[in-house]
Image 1 (cartoon, chains in turn blue, green, yellow, brown):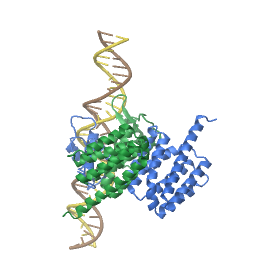
Image 2 (cartoon, each protein chain N blue to C red):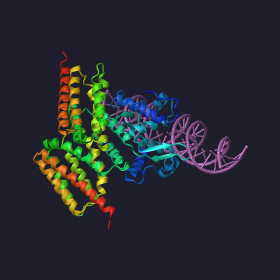
Image 3 (cartoon, rainbow over the protein chains, first blue to last red):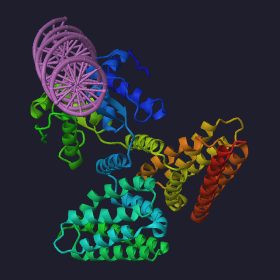
Image 4 (cartoon, chains in turn cyan, purple, green, red):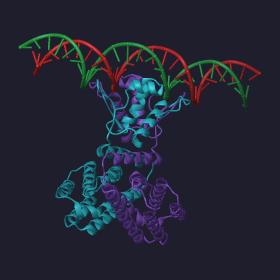
Length: 243
Length: 243
DNA sequence: GACTTTTAAATGTCAGACAAATAAAAATTC
DNA sequence: GAATTTTTATTTGTCTGACATTTAAAAGTC
């Protein structure tokens, strides 16, 4: 692990990159202890605050964890699926909100990925996951539900559908696509009638999953995508001529 | 933006979270300048090094960028697709390498997602993307190619396929799935014969895309997945009884 | 008016110090 | 001798104050 001493700026970034490379390449393995901050400062010939800034960069990516005390220090962290989920969701959400991605583009991507889960989910979904979906459908039918709560329940429903595929890698990859859509969905103020339609389509999905009918799930997802996109178009249209 | 002063540990993490929340919620908008480090230190009632550690955490996630000089400071960064790509790839790669994910699970997820792109790619792929795929197939057929180079070309081929769908959100979501597989693929030392088979399947995919034949692309991808998984099983078998 | 110099503001880095947590080692007690 | 308590050393977390470097605006000069 070496850094370029000729470039005296961004030392902490260089050090972070050097350690990151060591982790990704496998030179540092999970749960291995890094040298203490003082030793790292010595090795890289920088001050301890600079080393600390580098370590905080790595901690922000969940690549290391730190522990105080006599046997403490910085340890290579086993990146958990949960950590990866939340990173993925933050990144995806910001990517969509900051880059003027059209609703259609985001929607298309999300449903394309979700349809990819449909056959596996139809085959493998557990009774528990099906129960979760039914419960969310029930919640969505409650009157007086705020738009935010309705959307949160919508996300929970679709996550259960994705998790039904029983493939944690797939669930991780889809987490961003499903969750990042929520802020965009929130912008579509659902009327009572549109909620009804969505709930019905959710019911169709659940029924098809119940019957382990892969084609049925896919068909219902296609319908739901078409309906969602139409809804977005209508809202955009209304905003254009509000009278 | 407030932090909990009762908990005197992890102050920099708390401050980073407070600013992160402000960005995600939209309270801080793209290109907006944050207060100077000295001002933030004042606001949060902490020292400047602590503020700096918080800012470095955010910089590690590409949420802010810093600029030196009179009109410098920390600015909310527009998260680019490229930044998001590389974060996604790093996270996905580490997730797979650190969590004993089976080859089958990773492979299934990757091909499920890739098949989701097939219909769109068949419809929309540009001649340029098709040419990229043909070029990669040609490269893969070169004798003397290292396993690493073969796999890198494989990744380039599949990325062109995904990009062919013309949906940047989809490309972003799949970047992790496709790229993170490479280290796992590298572990399968391809024999000359297995390379030939893969190249032929790649050719089938390109031909089907050329003909805008969505079903053909999907069928070829299914074949490729089955072949890849069989290959992995064979390698595992050979390792069990190397004689 | 165009160019040069100065200045001020901001980040980047450093050095040294103390606080707090933590586990191992040492001392004490039974 | 064993169990408990106290001490000690190590390490991270934080603070203070300082200086270097970069950068753009302000002031000065021709």
